Image (cartoon, rainbow, N blue to C red):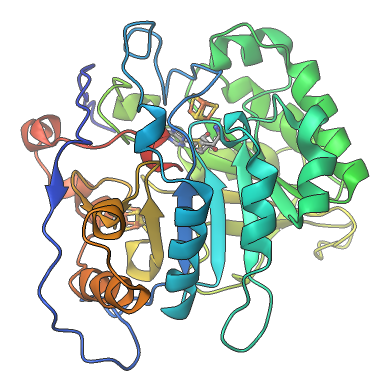
Length: 377
Ligand code: SAM
Ligand code: SF4
Ligand code: SF4
């Protein structure tokens, strides 16, 4: 693979915004320019985090001088719930709370309880989940479950304490996250674990992680290290491809490819095989998310709402649409909000990962992008 480098710079773009397109959407099924429906909404509830994973919030940039959003700029819980309802009316069936570290947002369980009450038009329950670094789960798992959360995703980049401390870069012990996962299991939350793989840094954790979670009822997913944001100094040669991850696990535990469970599923699923070579559900599965080596933009049905209420149509977008302004300054009604969001989605043609390979390193370096900690993963 050729070496491409995204330079270490801080390009916070929250002050910029895209113009909401004119009212062209005529009603009917809401599809973007590439015929993708709006199904999945990720809501970032804070841009702060207690970790400094260097692929996401490197210490050199996110230091004591970094200016995080002032509290008044954040969407409050009522605004988030109101927007969530409007999105559900437009087709959203899955909401993921994220950040920054979402469990740092005070009284998050109150928001969870408000969102858990939202029903889809056919009166089914919304698929509500949350992604966390797990550091506060021991304290919060039961409260979240009681508030109506059914499942969570915990990010965990290794089992070896020394490797984990390097990955989080704040010397946080892995034991506390493992205790958090246990607390979530006890509380009855469904759990997935996500591991970002950086060649050399935590490649040696792939097999131990597979071994630890095999047969535990927890699906482990490996994520390719992405060139998201503009601060992590991404290099292509630090990406370990999903194919390499699967090959490493296969050497120890035979795997069989499983069908996708839903359209727009980001992970390719591999089940652990029994002695006869057939998938054994008791042993469970792993997933690989190949955002770099096998783009899945063609089925991407995800929108992202930033902490301060800007709507982003792609993880790699540079501009967001200011829904907070529509609500706070222009007193938009729910119907106005719905038609603005529908028009925005109607115009969407983003497919960065499919285009990545064709972009020159220079064009890539000049592209201004928002940070993952601002729009959420
Ligand atoms: N703090 C929470 C956490 O870590 O789970 C939620 C927010 S974090 C931005 C969401 C997800 O994005 C995490 O699973 C994290 O590992 C992933 N992520 C962040 N930067 C990434 C990168 N450069 N490449 C791939 N995944 C990344
Ligand atoms: Fe924090 Fe999550 Fe980013 Fe790590 S990946 S720095 S835990 S927001
Ligand atoms: Fe979706 Fe953008 Fe990722 Fe493609 S690059 S899968 S459009 S978020």
